[in-house]
Length: 136
Image 1 (cartoon, rainbow, N blue to C red):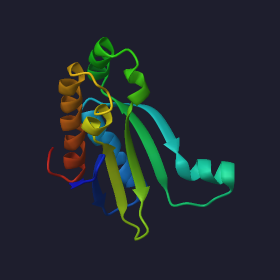
Image 2: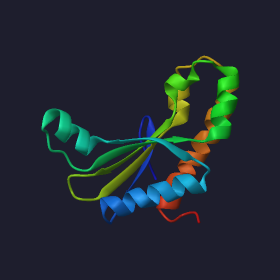
Image 3: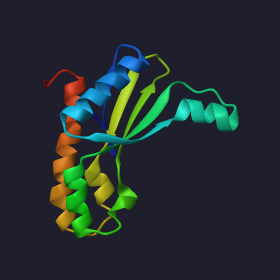
Image 4: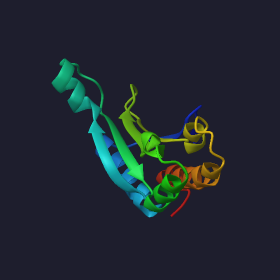
């Protein structure tokens, strides 16, 4: 697992479609549902006529945690869902990343959210570990 300033990621071999399927399966295994989906490759082509490598954002939501967060912070929906990215890199390797919720929640000055964000963070880290084959 690689760690960036605001995300956790991994690189895998295979097709974009295989990587997306692995991401979806890993999210489901950690009780996340997909609530939004943006195919950036198609959108860039449609809106700008630009060609980019495959790039998709899946918005994932762990409903129990989202409900708890809403009880403590009425506008927390501005920071939801948890975005995940799958992209094909320049070298053809598939990169998958998930947001680090602790970084997202750092902007919210509400101590009650720290536990919730930490729980979600651990689940998102497990998503990456599942994709890497470290968890079953």
